Image: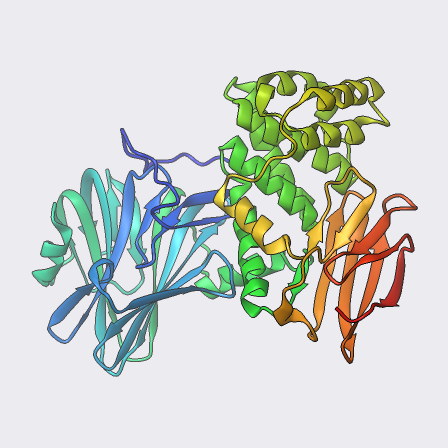
Amino acid sequence: MAFRNLFRRSAPTPIDESFGLLIGDLEGPVGRIDDKGTIAVTDSSWRVEWGAKSGADWRLAATQAAVRQDRVDDTPVFETWMRVPGGDVVQRVGVVNDGDGRALVIEYENASPDAVVVATAGIAAAAMTTDHDGASIDGVPWIRSARLGAATVGSDIWAAIAANPTGTDADGAGGAAILTPVPHRQRVTVVVAIEGEIPNREVTPEDIASGWRAVTADALEVEVPDVQLSSAWRRVICDLVLAAGTDDPVVAGEAAWWLDLAGLHREADRGRAAVLRAADRGALDAAGAAVGLRALASRDLRAGETSDLAEVAGPMAAIAGPLLDQTTARLVARATEVHAPEVASDASALAERLTIADREPTSPVAAGAARVLGLLFADADITGRLSMLPKVPESWQGQSIDVRRMVTGLGSLSFSVRWHGNRPAVLWERTGGPDGAVLGCPGLDPSWSTSERNGEALLPAP
């Protein structure tokens, strides 16, 4: 889906992961949010800051030390707490998309004993106006709130806010802010347009977080003794969905590989589409081509659906050149061996000539997925063997482990570990994939393996 973007400014410098974490919707990221709750759009052409007035003093969140941040239910919806006398002011922010437009939904909660005023400031190199409806940029509605107290415009917007404006009508350039009163223990919502029209659908950040959890409800589940690791996977899987919507073929293609493993094939297809779009416009470099080949092979091997791999494997391998690795070439061979045996033969021959054995993910979100899942699973989708728990930290021994719905090239795998005294019992079930695939559990017993599709095995004490 494409919206007419009326808010993009000229000559921007794109932001990167050093600014903060990705925020967006199922169409992809719209920008990043830092640990103080400042949001900058992807091309850095504008940003939104916030602050609160408690008593006589204004506090700009970006400059305060007493600010902490977390995610709402491990999703790309963020909750930032800023300390004020007697309590906190809480900012929650997510992205809504109603088909006509995309917008930031910013909710402020007053968790302090006194009434506060919250300022939402939009900063850009543009002409701005404010009135009783909110703020506009170049004449286009931009920031809106149903409970508008005052508004102001200024090149130094926080100086203009500190002057405590009482009216709503102003014009100028550089920054516009709306001031919203928030009584004790109440919440208010501010909407900031990103693309298209301001969405009409009223939602809260909690609603947006629930939507994210619904998208990932049937995906790979991980429950391990390390609570932080389990939580990290729930965060990473949402970030992978976001990353699949980027225009960067490396980021999107690497996300597709891990999304297939999680069983989110439709979301992975968005990442593959980004790779193919880059190829169509001649913008695919060597790294993107190597990643793209693996992402396309993943669709054939894990989703069980034929991709465009057979048609593009030769040209993409040529683009990848010396950055192509043996594992990816063998994945291409395995993915095409039935419906395109000539392509498979060429890929196998190429693998023998390559000097790089394998490639590590380079995008932060894919690297995060590799770190989280590396303790739980090892599979190159080419050997006919799956390794459950290649490494088991000593702190996990004696505690339950559950991994559900991991989609591999050899079928969907779920497994658990329970303990009988000091002996681990491994329970597993593999559906789909070829008969005869071998399961091992080297982190608990390197000598044990099975070709049974499901069962239970009591292993010796580690």
